Amino acid sequence: MVAPSSLEALIEALRCLPGVGPKSAQRMAYHLMQHDRSGARRLADGLLLALEALRHCRLCNTFSETEICGRCESGKRDARLLCVVETPVDMNMMEQTHAYSGLYYVLMGRVSPLDGIGPRELRLDRLLARACDGVVQEVIVATNYTNEGEATAHYLSEMLKNHGVTVSRIARGVPVGGELEYVDAGTLAQALRERRPLAE
Amino acid sequence: MVAPSSLEALIEALRCLPGVGPKSAQRMAYHLMQHDRSGARRLADGLLLALEALRHCRLCNTFSETEICGRCESGKRDARLLCVVETPVDMNMMEQTHAYSGLYYVLMGRVSPLDGIGPRELRLDRLLARACDGVVQEVIVATNYTNEGEATAHYLSEMLKNHGVTVSRIARGVPVGGELEYVDAGTLAQALRERRPLAE
Image (cartoon, rainbow over all chains, first blue to last red; front, side, top):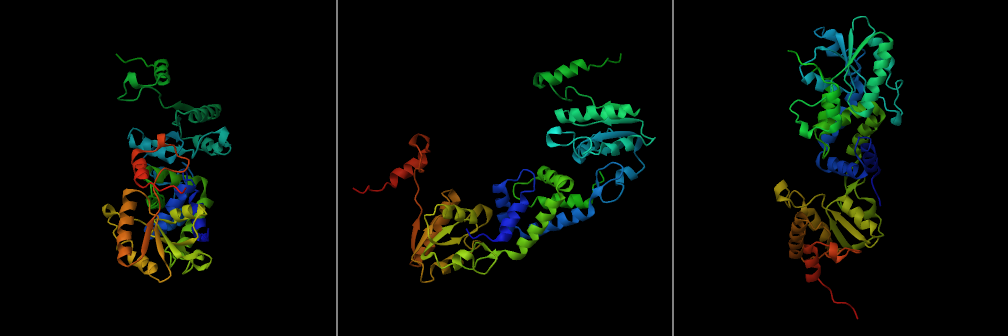
């Protein structure tokens, strides 16, 4: 087949997107070139602008266009609390609760030996330095309750305790609105083990 | 939330890709910016290059970097046969059969009234001019056997016959290797209606 090389190159380049295989990439390329050239241009511009502008906040490690992100710089948050999350999405989820007024540290990943991601790759030394700044009094570990998130929490907890930092973990149990009938046995077992005394 | 505007813009721009909703776009943007910046740059370059280089072959309407694509220009194909397909992917499928040596015309779409795509949007006048060049002796309609593909075939057939062009349609029936037990009733009914005499 006599395929234009620029089209082949575009299809190949689209495969860098997560979850996009050869068929999807082909469909995307044809769609953009046939039906949405202005969208393709906006996407190219968006990529270049983001590559140029985005870096990581020096304090919380999330994406930021400035050395220190707006949230860390605002001064309106409780600097004694530091919540550790895996991703910026998780941070947004925490914010949407309107139940937390402290600061964050975004790992931008999780400990995952199978993927070759260990403490060094996550640069946990930066988190340690952040937690030991003399202002932080408690680190709340809010990594996922998946195997990898749990392993990360365990590692963080050991590391921080060894440096005298108070560490806590978000609670695990029956979801709000959840019915016991539909909660899996593992969750229910944990909720039972981690039961709390009721105030009178 | 204090989100960097370049990140928001990238997420929005990624939504021009077919099948990509807000959640996927966010995941893609975070992935590119965190884990694959070189991939993001290749994608931006690929988009810009394709936008710059790709146009449509003047003869067969497929994507091409030159005014006339390599296949149309080769002179090795049978110019008396013109096969009409919906997309470049369909053209590739036809080529993979190694059973066709004629030329193509790629509609780059199909008649689809619900999407506001009629004969004018498909620019079928260009196909008509191509089919009436004095060399083409038969137009083989190879649009899909979907409702829209069938409607397109019907429209094309009427249009071309009115101009004295011989039109044929690829056969419909039981797939090669197919067992009657697993073929749907509609296909089987068609295969029965369109049965062919067996040579002695």
